[in-house]
Amino acid sequence: MNTYNRLFGSGPVGLAISIALLFPARYFKNAFNIPDIFIGQKLLRWTIFIALSVAAIMIFIASNKALGIKTRGKTLITTGIFKYFRHPLYAAFLTFFDFGLAILLNNWVLIAWAMLLHPIWHIVVSGEESMMKEAFPGEYEAYCRHTGRFFPRIEMIKNRENYQK
Image: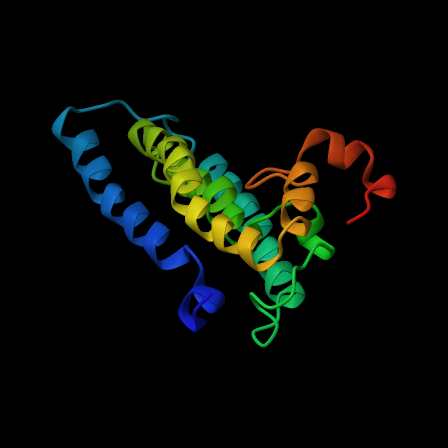
């Protein structure tokens, strides 16, 4: 695993794809006059956006706290936020911030954009996960069986006290 992949993983590629798809989504809404999600509910939109953004920031902070720069890609982290998400930094962006942004911008097309990003990012991170399987043979596969990629697994939440690496 080279230093760039160890430090950044799939993030830059996934972010570039996400941003590249954001602009056509905004254009599509305007070009086809697609109706807004909420009509006259600006406070509600801001409240949802702020709540989802706070969740994203909390996950982002927890990720960075658990995943030190020096140990990134050298040690398999399975504690803290990594107990629930294999890719919490990406989950913060995909699962929380993007949907909040789509609601704030009051745009059905951006809701579709946020949903479309999930399968795209599943493909993008598959290369990163292959590197992790090589770096941590057996251990990473066991971790994957108990931990969701971008969403916590329901059985993991129910049985978190019984979870072992």
